[in-house]
Length: 239
Length: 239
Image (tube, helix red, strand yellow):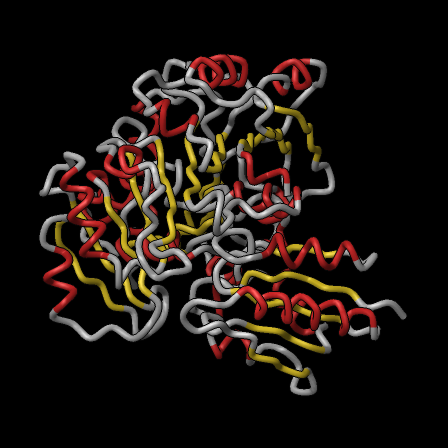
């Protein structure tokens, strides 16, 4: 029998935010390759007999590591295994799904994608505020907060981020928040623009730090953060 | 007993893309208020005894209609009903959740939010291409394609949309696609930028029309589209 690879979005943290389709894929998996950001409670939904392999990349991954993951995916599927590649949130946002899909196809295998609930939506649910508003925020944008060197990316469209009619979600936005705040203020963003950091959105350990784009960095600096963090910025978040 | 209101994201179309938590809320609902975009197969997951009310707003809703929906939500919850407000995709993106949440709170009730898989992620899964790329697309943005007058919003940050280093998802982007294409080309976007229209993403009727930001409008004009459409634009979509 031929194996197959399914890329599954594990959702933002709460195992109940896995999709029915994601659950079905997990239950049918012989092997699960998972990232650090995948909640343990989601991983528990796989069969007891399933082999679980942590391919997490704490910090910043050298590219050879990603190549090892893709090689392992292909090897296991070629052996006839049903492989689930479990990624935090949704597989098509800020993961490196393209590299894995290309390798799977190059091996003559098919990749199925099961989308998931991405962290920004869980953070919005936590704040109980919509990310868009039909009059004042018709654009919502997601950005990553660091490049491979750990700094906020310089080649980003800062004016697009500072746009007062957009809502911005910054993934993994904790460490680079002071630099982001400084730059957005320089771009002319209103210092009173609401900004929130949501740690471990959708889990029992969920924590919300509320402020403005001006004072959120100092508010966050007073806290000890350990889980995944998402920063939301935008005038419409006043609710 | 006091009723409650749960805003549930129904996901993009495939009922299997509902979350476990969303399913639980549906199964516990006395009444389900749903939009036109909610797939019938998701609605079928509610109990047979549950009252289903279509509050769909085909086309563009006059604001009085939204007030009727919120008034109905509050009335039912005050009667002690478990009310589920079922919205296509995710409740916090391009719905009018804020107005409903405010009304629920103003009535002294609580609103729970269950996030869902938003259409852009289902479209990315359909294309089997990531919306982001660590080197070339660190920003992804979602916009709505029309305002209350049915035209593409004029007060949008066009430069942000034409940014070659971002990926853009246009919700309900079918009718206004010619205007969007024209404007993005005027803003200097490379005419060869890949662009896709995905109709009924994640369902058996899913259809993909592939092209570029230059030729997608004429390709789409040759087809008859009836289901919800999402347009994806961006250099990284070459895969």
